[in-house]
Length: 431
Image (tube, rainbow, N blue to C red):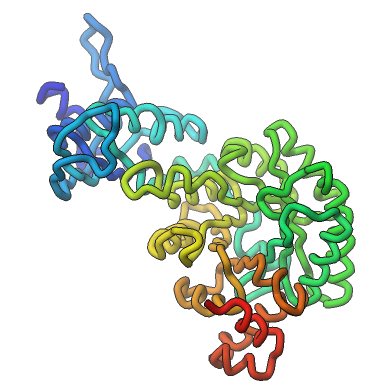
């Protein structure tokens, strides 16, 4: 690419209409001239060949993605992860901010993904490593999307649960129980104070626990717990399946007693979720299978925050995500970035409830709350409720007791001296 061609892929913030562009933040390692690599990155994800042979035209002003900012961070003798094939040699590590005209793909999630994290960016000449770190949408683009139907406040109203976290529990054992035994365990947790009892992400519609029967049993157990406690409850059924079954399974689950449904976002696809959002009558909940496969490496792939924003765009009311602690292998900064992506302003779209999870219990609740600095989150133990030494009723009660202490400004361990369920949870689950 010669110098004149290079300049056609650069711009300044004041030279474009921000309402016409998505803003993309990449980090990349490039062999050779960083400016040329950044221009190739723009070309490959938008116009590529920008004129026909023998025709005096230039498609870049309207359709070309353009570099707004380019920062060279350092020079390295080799890429962070040397590749068997591809450019070799010393690299420059860079940050690049790109403005991409959204008329190139319109308000269509598959086409958006194909452009900004598809063949173009990840096969850019001279760029062996690249990661899409963030994506920002203008109001004009967001206006085409419904976003969450209920969001944080709608979920709180359904549960009559205000000024505190929403307490979830993953019913355990997660995949091996028939519906009647499964519902007994869920009922016990609701009686102890759990707001939402849920299927695990791998339990969908197997022969040993058919979705229809599971929803019938759990729906009845939920209604019994609501009558006994006077508090609304939610049974969250996993309807992850082939795309052409989602609407059918949503209707079946709701008819039989589920009052929220979970879909594993990336295995099913964000466009499928957007389709289901148009039909759904209950809150939609996302789980995170497949996200680590392309987000974990620090200099390659897609930052999980991007997928969090896209899940909110597609219409999820609740987004379960990898949380704090060593088991999830996710940095605190990344967890917090995902939580902000759920809650911060995003046009007129409602906030989605962030649910960072992984090996949580009454022993970790205070730490999670302090890190997040808000009550607008879901807390989602599995073993911390269903593996409690005194059973799931006590496991759920331990969460509520821990929160009572936190809300009152009382040390959790002090509060535990007068609350046995909390005391046993701290004994069982403290590191």
